[in-house]
Amino acid sequence: MSPRPSLLLLNAKLIPYEDARVHVLSSAFKYGIAVYEGLRAYANSRTNELYGFRLREHFERLLRSMKVARMSTTFSAEDFQRQLIDLVRANKLHEDLHMRVQAYVDEDDGRIGSTEPVSVAMAAIPMGRYFAKEGVHVQVSSWTRISEANLPPRIKAAANYHNSRLALLQAKADGYDDAVLLGANGKVTEGPGYNLFMVRDGILCTPPTTDGILEGITRDTLLRIASEDFGLSVAVRSIDRTELYVAEEVFFCGSAAEVTPILSVDRHAVGAGDGGPVARRLLERYVAIARGEVSDRPEWRTLIA
Image 1: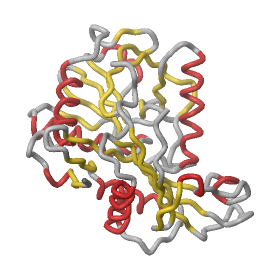
Image 2: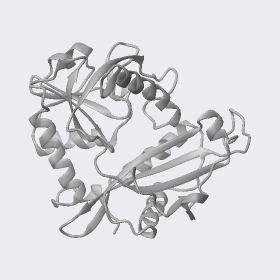
Image 3: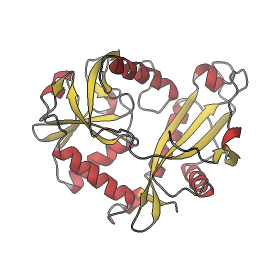
Image 4: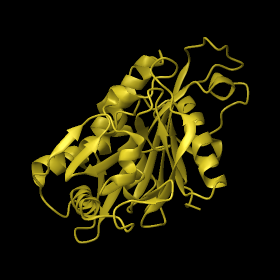
């Protein structure tokens, strides 16, 4: 269990961890009216510096999610970024972190159509790797991924993750580590909380955002590293289920998942069943950039401490 920070941020004010409470009859609790971001910060042991990774892009996505959910705010992405940095510094944190920012409708005994008041809470918690294993065995879920026709998957809405949770729990009950969800069109979308990549015939492929996936920031990061840094051929295209069975590599990616190889799909070994060189290279490069171990892409790093 991750250690608790002493302070959280609520509506731009530092408060003790124990005082961060939402009423059981609030709109957020009753109806799941909340959107959020999960962000990471990485410590550089050589320079003793702590960097937030692509903070601006995360907060820009938060504002897009809030717009779709009809939540208003007077804060900009820059305001939110400054508040998060202040929170980390106030807690005197100087290690790898998972940071969560959540906007929610906090009307006491609110209605399903409530749009205000909107509260924004922030937490910064020490965290190492999300997946304890070096790779995971997954099941293609019988649960269908939500679509634009019911809940918008491109934003990080808390309600979306009921769909993810059902798929993950079913996979674990069936003896797998995790799940992959198909869309209503039968095409591969993503995992319960992470985007997906596949290497097929030497080409790095990932589903388009119009196939029912989150507009992932780590996904965008890997696409750019693969094509611009490594010169790999990349394709953003629809993926069939059985392509996962015959691919050279398949892996998850996300702020928490980073780059995590998928070793098998429905008990079909992926490649040699031990991950693959593309995933390893991308993970090494991704972490090196995020930690500031290389000077490349400084615009992706924000010095926190």
